[in-house]
Image (cartoon, rainbow, N blue to C red; front, side):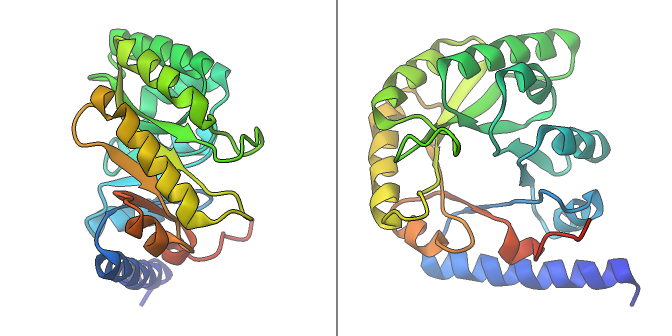
Length: 230
């Protein structure tokens, strides 16, 4: 078996294991996180029925998007500088990290331009990022700011509010953070388009997140393995 074939087999095995964990935990959608891994890995995942992956870095994600052409979709799950909002709005199928009014404005402007230029066919789906501790290094809006952000996205012409995302601080009670995020999502559900998406849980805590109501888990290492040595 060649190297690429062996890698595909490894990814298939890891993906089956994670999907089984999710099913046993109660079920949720899966977003593999593919940062630092080559586009060939993403293409292999598409062959195993993965319809979307998550990326953290704008430049890397944009390059992969140019190759993939929407199969699978790429979701932006990393922090976005407002000056990069125009670029992200061109290639992202969705953004999970909206945490400020400035970013709402940036993505609205970017999505409007992308649609006008023919780079997007429709509005940009976004999730609000909730921060349990307000740490600016990790991103996210504190609970008190979520309602105003939901209003701003709902009022935008070319954005669609789809739900909420959260990552518990390292020293936090993950279950408590996930429960708090779920309540926040319920409080803004009247402005969400479609079934509310609750993006919560990663490799180490996806079972806890699903128990607290997560509908989408983001799994990197347990599917992709260690980061490639550069």
